Image 1: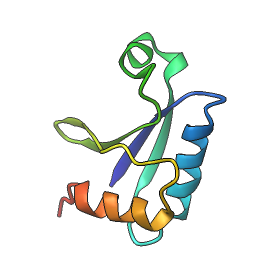
Image 2 (image 1 turned 90 degrees about the vertical axis):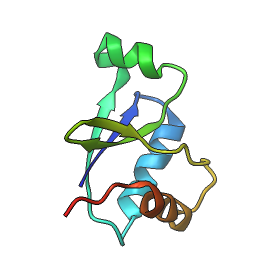
Image 3 (image 1 turned 180 degrees about the horizontal axis):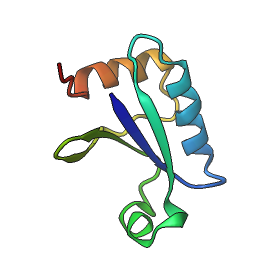
Image 4 (image 1 turned 30 degrees about the vertical axis):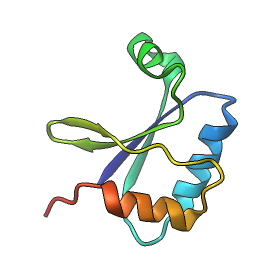
Length: 88
């Protein structure tokens, strides 16, 4: 499974979500961090939305529900389990 985190340097909400994702233990995934300042299309799409977490699928990217910065790692895991598309 492959997740993408749209972020930018200096964003404490992005850093917090990245730290929590690193602590998720029950779901195996690769994580790519994309800095929205490196591409104009990413910046235009996510300037006011970061952090944005997506699942990469063959047909494109699925944006996952936004989670509160105060949410625990367990709550993040629950959100992922509920919303990720698991391919076999």
